[in-house]
Image 1: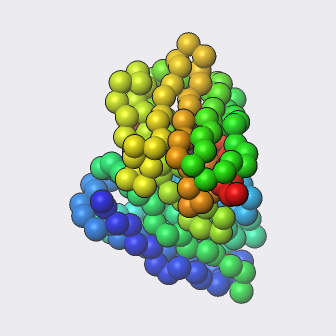
Image 2: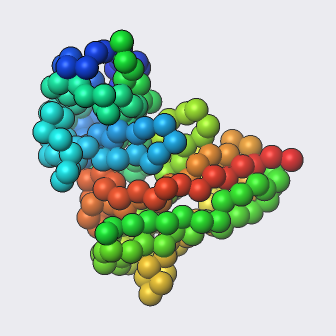
Length: 107
Length: 120
C-alpha cells in the first residue's frame, strides 16, 4: 500500500499568516493527489485535485504544488474560517490512502 | 445541486450486519465511480471501498475485504455498502463520495455521513 505522510501533525498560526503543509507519498503517484479540508462534525471538502488544480469555489489563497512523491498545500493568508483539519489523499493505486491529517489551530 | 444522502447507520452487535445506502442527485450517477470512506471517532479518514460507474469493477481495503460488499443500482441512483461480520473497529461515520471521473482524481462530492456503532 502507498503510505501518505503529512507534516506537521498540528500547527498553530494567526489570522493573516502564511501556512504550508506537506505530504509525502511512499512511492511515485504522479499527480493523482488531492487535498481536503474538514471542519468538526462535517464531511470533508476537496480543495485541490491533480496536485495543483483548485476546486471550483475554493478561495485563491489556497494553492497546491508537487508531483511524484512530494506535495505541498499553502494557505497564503489565513482567514478565521480556515482553522480546520487538512488531509492529503492519493488515488493513483488501490487501496486509496489518506494522510493522517494536519490540525490547523488558532494561535 | 450535486448531492449525496446516506442512510442505514445505527447500532449493531458484533458479528451482525448492516446495509448502508447513498442516494445521489444532481449529476449523471452512472458516469462516475463512487467510494465509501469512513472515520472512526476522533480519528482520520480511511478509504473503504470503490466501484466503477458501470458497477463492473470493485475495490476494497484489506480491513474490510471478504466482509463488506459495495454495489450500485444506476436505475435508482443509489450506492450501497453491505457490511457483514461487523467488529468493534468498524465503528465510524461512513461517508459516500463521488470520484471526479470514472475513477477520477479526488472526491468532489461527499454525503453528510451516517454513523455505524458496533457494540454489545
